[in-house]
Length: 238
Ligand code: 1GP
Image 1 (cartoon, rainbow, N blue to C red):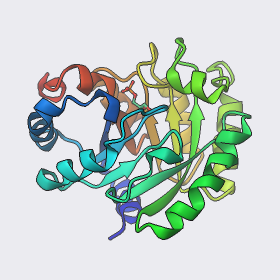
Image 2: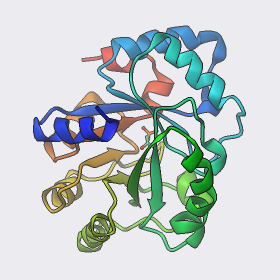
Image 3: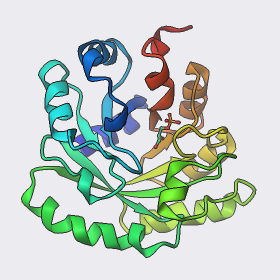
Image 4: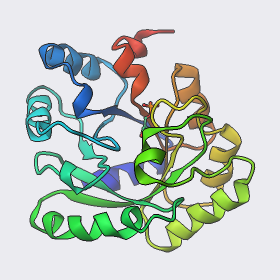
């Protein structure tokens, strides 16, 4: 079964999914085995690999190391085409639809297309919407786009719906890694109730309760990066 088909089935069955985001630049290679065993003990269903800007040239190596001891599907979550790796299972083929920077709307995708065409990666078109999380995040800085203000939920909804109408298979509501404020539950609710495709929510979620609230509001997949990066026992806490 394809990764996307599995996400659709999970949404139908109300089975909530959890992705751990690993930034290759922040991996402590000495403790990689411990990290992998913590991922195996966690409720994670997917691993995302990437970041707005990655300097490491060891993405292939990282993924093949993880794959030796972990069977979760690995999806690339790339900030640009240099982060494409054939070792992964699939790629969130992102378009930053909240922004108006053509590089992140289409240019990177044009550069990536010939590389992806030759790969075996499962390609999942994803509309990526950056929401204001009350702190400047790497993605806003690097993409040179303005996050969408939370006081205009109708505009966020119209953006998500436009993404769906353009054929995106997922919508990713993102407050940005390490955001002070996660995406508000009211916004998650509004979007999830008014699109058919599964909704990913991430950025600034640092408690298990935050994960639960995002699920209750309709997120199909929650992404945890910083909280697990700072504390590999994050999922063991009550
Ligand atoms: C970033 O949504 C992810 O793209 C995860 O964010 O690092 O804040 O968990 P955090």
